[in-house]
Length: 389
Image 1 (tube, rainbow, N blue to C red):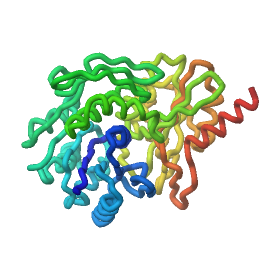
Image 2 (image 1 turned 120 degrees about the vertical axis):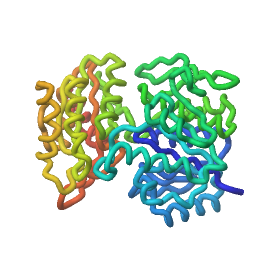
Image 3 (image 1 turned 135 degrees about the vertical axis):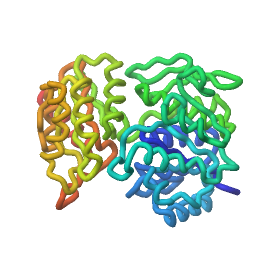
Image 4 (image 1 turned 90 degrees about the vertical axis):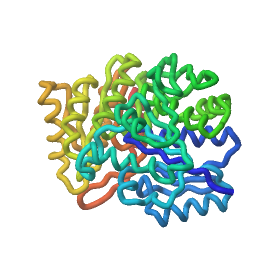
């Protein structure tokens, strides 16, 4: 038996897509394994993930263990770093998926062109035996398709996409969509929210069909997935407002997320966010601009400052607000306090979004790393408010 390997690359959506495909494979009676941002897991085994894509020897060892333990399909989030550093050079991918491309990791890659070229390498490994699944609506995806020498299944909303959403509706309860593909149509219901997740669902449908999984099984797998750790993760409360934790940590990811929540017509949208230290500094003012335009009130705070001064990072973000002449923000450097203040300010019908760290359970400072889990902090703050009410 040989392990079927699916590699997923792109700026956003990789983690969500692994969860969707894992659920689809399980419904199809397969045994999936996942190597990605949140953890490395397969039946009866889960390891924490120090990096999205492991070093080459670790990757090969894990895949060997999966095969020995009956895993049939391995899903790998393939980062641009991993492609540039040749960590996946020895992997024979059956399917390579491209989700999208937006500005990220430009502290590592010299330009967007270099970033794209790194991502593109995934599609040239073992090219004779494989299929590409590509987002046709993304400009970089469109370019990738024009350059690829292999069988490609496109997905998107545009009429030219092979797998496309004909009709779709977004609500607080999730997504409903009619998805057309050659030879049929499937009606999808998902608990995931927002337009960015419609694209993740279309990628999952396209990949499932490329692997000859029946459409009803794909539909069942998508419906079965209720949530993903730190990805628009809903935190329940009895106070009449909605609270979400999400990993969005780039300007484009945050913009997509805020637009998705705006579509749900909140009374007000309150945002807690910061930016990572020792990473691309150019995105910080752009994150401020996105927040100024799309959130009613932002609490600018610390993320993982690493070796940088947290106040200097906050000042970089603040430039985005100042440039727009916006005053709809507060500076609260302590992340726990920022979350508490945002929740205390929320009223019935509001949405509170805590962005940037998602599933992470730590915060990295210059001289120490502490335990910090946004969802835990949110739940504790909500309990204090509920006890008072």
